[in-house]
Length: 243
Image (cartoon, rainbow, N blue to C red; front, top):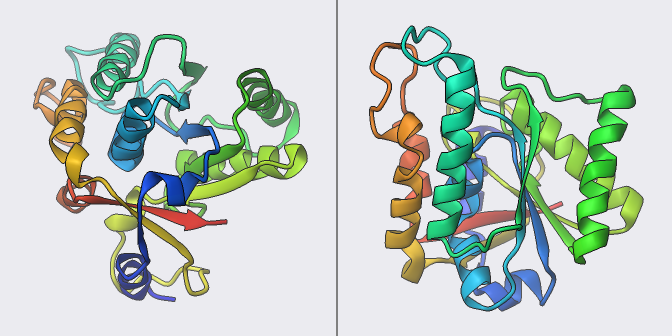
């Protein structure tokens, strides 16, 4: 399918509430970078927390190469900033301490897709699910157009299959891919979660990622905020796709 048709199908998915989407299952949300959890799942996180079933969030990479040309902000400085930004954003969404996991892979396509490092990362995710009773993994869409996103999806698929867990995907970069781009996707199945009541809170959480969206770092002109992605993140629905 072409991405224009894929997005149209996403926008036609049935509108559901949190109970219909999760059916009481506690999620582990996988974020390729600090901020993806807020952009893609901020409304769901806020609803889960308000319902007394706060999810666990595993942030796979450190986000340290978001501004590779900056002279004022080194990768190490950005890494520390982005971890604190993620903590602040998730705190705004209501997530208690102890529910966020920073796996610490270096940003810039460092996530493994095979071999011992892949198996080690998978065991860490399995351990979170087993220890804390997570029954569903929510991972980035497997065709999301960026290596770290697709590697995170691969890890989510592997852990879900091995541990007999449910699996749901969420798109991030899929919102900004060209309409004419062909992707290996059949007719999408899934849901649109109604987050009307959480839109303002989600916007505050997005802006807590100040290094990315508040113009905080001004000396790297290659870092451009994608307006299509931001428009999708600010909608009163979030899209979740059946595996």
